[in-house]
Image 1 (cartoon, rainbow, N blue to C red):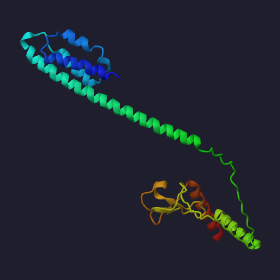
Image 2 (tube, one colour; image 1 turned 30 degrees about the vertical axis):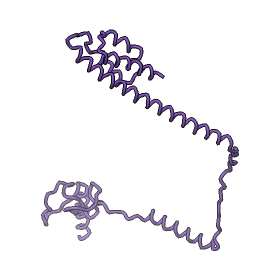
Image 3 (tube, rainbow, N blue to C red; image 1 turned 180 degrees about the vertical axis):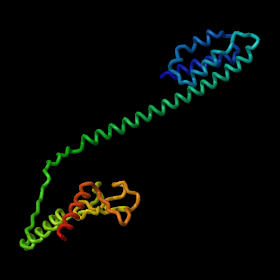
Image 4 (cartoon, rainbow, N blue to C red; image 1 turned 180 degrees about the horizontal axis):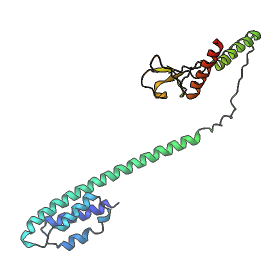
Length: 223
């Protein structure tokens, strides 16, 4: 595993810092290049912090040494935690592998069950004959007569006027007794009020002529 190598590198760095060793930035950086790609993000960030310190500055050498020592110790703790986590995951994988092996062995020992044969569903059709066939025929005839009666005897609504609509609002009657329509709506014939009582009203010139001819024939018969 890579962890012992990382721990060894960090311990060397801690020993050098405790002895106030004056190393340059290049020495620290190149000492960790072989392990940077294998570390977690937190460890890499800590390494970059260590790398960014100006170790070559003699005026601040003591302050930087303390910071480097603190960062190196923190890095060592992170590596140990990572090492513990990896060991735990390895143990878990081994435990799951053992469980899977036991399960596979148990399946192999089980007898193979034959699939059940596929059967088509049984269809049952029950037909019952009536004990009174004549009563059934009469009932069907009565029902058919009711249906035919409803179809042929639908109530028809009476219509009037040229518009062939139902009766509504004020209406006027043609004075020609032979008029085929007889009653008319005021708006359809251009009336806004009822005709005067002593005046005759006709729906068309044809009705007017028919009324006049009828009057002439009646007078001739009286003579």
